[in-house]
Image (tube, rainbow, N blue to C red; front, side, top):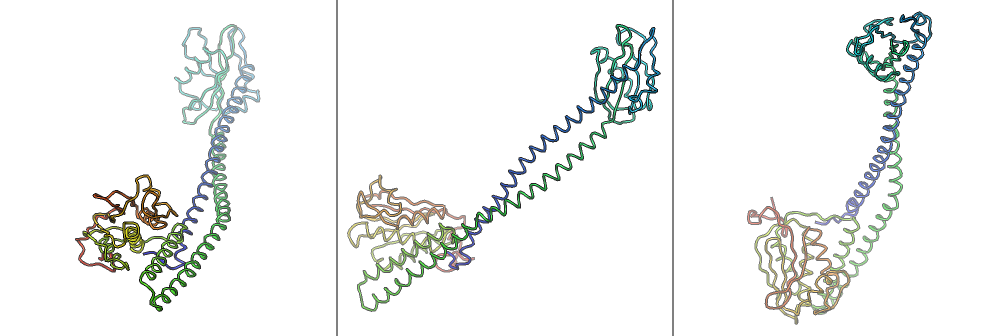
Length: 438
């Protein structure tokens, strides 16, 4: 059923605005987070590269400086300056690789190790360092673990003995300090970005809330207008009907008043739903019973026959009754001379209303469902708001509405609805007109 309470009727539109506000806040925060993540990733990458370059420069400069402090004299390597050189004293790990053999691939001996031999790489890695120095004939920088397990950055600078490399000064510095400083930077970036995202989400929520205020005020004003319009239109219609009945006016006048009242009710319901002020309540119901009751309640139903089978659908009883009523009244008005028969058929998910009029040309069958199209039967026929409301009700129930030629002449107006898995025949009781009971 359509909810009539004004306060509860506002909730669907307000709920949509609130969901929109949350979505805007989420998008604002997500966009900010994505930008900050990119910037943080760039900053982390630049910092890592800068620290590695600085570390390489430091250890390479120290190794080159110490390689120039020692020398060969008649094949003898003099290491005495290493005991007094400030570069040697400030080195974390220091060693001299030397070989007295000229054969390629000979393993070097290790001299002047500071602080201990365990701080150096293993023998195989030392051989690789020595071989790289011989191959490149310049200072080489590489990472290699020490024997005690620490991770160090090494630089090996050649010491020339005439025209050959006779030794190499090996200097190492631990990566832990640089990595620790880098990890501190990463933690601060993570904390800072998280704080900024939270601030951005709060600011976005505040701004979206302020942006929604005019929409909320507009919804309140629209709902107030619709409520006032409903009151202002229904009250004179009810009074008019009482006056017509009291004066003994014709049945046709009463039918026109009733039709106008139903039309106003349908238009107001449609306006409230399209504005988000109301929501249709879809419940399991007996479509065949609803159609029969609706036809019986029509003022002029003598010429209308109903053929039905038990059918259960999910629908709003009021809206479906209005759609059926519009279909039948449209067939009565435009389906031939007054008193022409109208056949209503209810099958699985289908309400078909047939008349015996001139029909509607195929080119105009979609146009007559548009709002405001009016006229009589024939090529320019239309039905005002009647069929437009039928199609709107069909779409609201995830169904369709269309016109088709009837066999032997006339027109068939079809309202198709998705059928529910439950069958009407399995229910022996029902609640109210057309509603399936427990």
